[in-house]
View 1: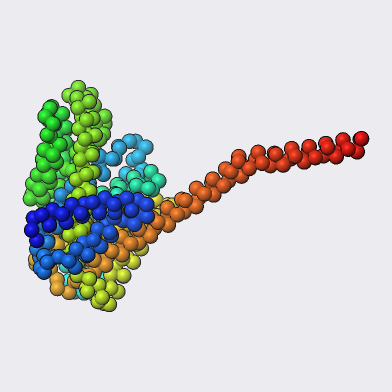
View 2: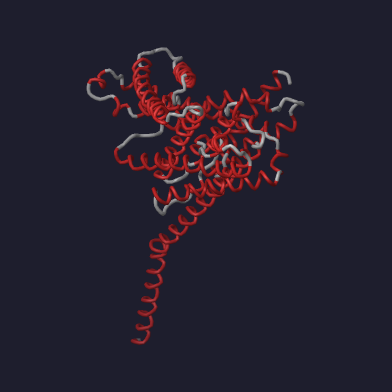
Length: 433
């Protein structure tokens, strides 16, 4: 494929992705499914070997990591830390953590029973399947009620962060037998990452507000991406750096108080926030587009026809929703729709699956299970969002009719009464004559 053809295809993909987003807002069908479908179509017309998964994986991994940074940053820049929102924050964190842990062991049990005899390896494969995809959820929940939308944004972001931490914690401490050493390592990792994240965030805000050149926002993205990669090299929870920076920038009134408030150039920081938010959205859109299209190009559809793996996948997905139902019921209450069914697997699931170390790779586990989980959970989310939208439309129509009956039909009723009174007066007048 020559360079001009490649440019045409890449441009067409971005244009189609834009229209997929519009279609997704109108139909509540996730644009991710359309992008994966587009990847499958491209796969059929691509030159022989171009859509080979071994060739696509390095590109997919880079796009996935950059996309994750942009998506979490985009979410963090939308989140406001207010006292009244604390209940949503802690509930979403608890639900994300407990659902992740319990789901991982449920999936590990199924994998261990049917496929992999080693319980530890089964758990390694189960964790990616237990992580919700903020890359799919965040752009899909814009039409939900504000409280439900914020809950889903927080929960999916926490699920991503804690899922990555859980995965690398498990793999990194596989040979350690001292439980105390493991606990100290995990707690120390989290505390160190949070402290570094806060310090780095303060420093970046104070430094970048002083930069007067027009070219500075992609410089900031480059710095954040580099910090994320350095953190991964040192086995830190790098995603916390991105999340904390977004929260500090968007909630500067909370983080810059007292003496620190004097150091902040408020108009400059506000300008950075506005422009940075726009660039983050645009970059996340482009990266997410190519990630899921390339993932679609790497899919082998024949693998979905294996009945054994299909049944195992159904059990895993059923377990995921069963655990989610219990968690939401306990910590949220009765109003758990459509949140119950908004639990797609996606970007992180794919990245962690291909990040499983060679010593834990098992030929018994099929990629079709991964694909089935991603597609089925996305379709279930799509159906639930469509039903929720129809329900809102129906309630809106009933409300409008009720309003009409009370207000618009009232003059008509009064008019009928007045006409009856006129007719009655006319009849009485005739009798008198």
